[in-house]
Image (tube, rainbow over all chains, first blue to last red; front, top):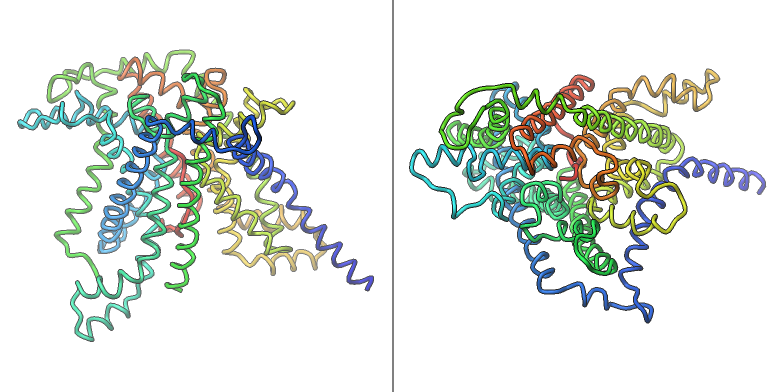
Length: 285
Length: 271
């Protein structure tokens, strides 16, 4: 009996080592977010949804529509192009080419924010280098296309979405076993049939889970959008930021409601990612 | 199972063009006298580089960025490494705490974290709001998985239990075991975590901008100010941040000296 108590004490003491990390998490993740949710739900008469009702003006609904559209588009295109490039990389016969391209993807995944946005202004802006080259051969990008628009923003986002997809999908592509390919071919399948009936079903959980990562990544992005388009493009993160800086006269509870709404969108996609990633690991184990 | 040679080259060339042209363009722009009406730059010059780097604010913002990045990386290293090791030898179930924290860290966008911290801590009598303390803590939250992942991967790759038991049977306590046995063995992981955190925080704009604004100017803040009023000088600053990011990545490759195949599911920085 005594011994049992002693080992329980020991166990408790062992958990105490996590105290600094747990305090950090509670203090800087849990409490601030919980209090944000609480204040978004509180009004004069206690618990209420009035902040949400008032926050969702047509202008803000438009911001959500734009953010969702931007995230869906860049996540979809990122998944497609990233997977294609990853396939090209692993098909490359030279190991040095593979390593160089993987390193490029690894670095550029974390290129983003202000320098990236500015690089796109220099490249595709109204007097950008590509714009000038295209003009010289008779293709006029402007005024139909503008880099300072939501389409321009999507192009800039793809600059970090594609490499991220490459890094996420490579392990799954490398996990496709040669034996499966050989078995399929020996049984008379064409290459096309192998990809459609064997590889794609195996890869689906990984592709979908990566899609959710890319979606959340784009939905929460702010620095790139702010540098590239300033307040011109109406997306959720830009609106929340301008509320924080006090550029717009509005009760702060409305900012809380916007933040909690977008947090729910991101959290759903992170949960989707975690769930599907677990399934992906199981299906390739 | 392979892509045929023609399509492979097309895909790789298109990818390289998309990834590299903006970088080359930015560099060329930073050394051109004028390049907004002709196909090629009208002349080459180092003037923009000289002007932008000779300002006092340039050195100050670089110094500030180094300070906050190094402080975050050190603080996270000290917070994470011993506790993750502890989880591996004493309480494997405790790993779930780190996984949940990593998911939180990825799942909370920068603008929302900034708002939540301002809203909560402005009512708390601690020296946090509008100081670099809150920025440091927010950056730790943001880059938590960048420290945790490489350390955990490094611990996975060695036989932690056997090493720890061997050390203890020779009379070492757990702190001695950690510093003298485990740490040297997982150093590549700790170092790459340190460098990843460093480069993430060095490029951080959102939290700095929203939490302390102009009171503590970091390099990315300085860069964004320039994009609004002088493109050429801004392009020189953009080149500097790209070079920084490359240099840190090369250092990580050198530290880990492994093939660059990723282990998958890694964290990403805020954009």
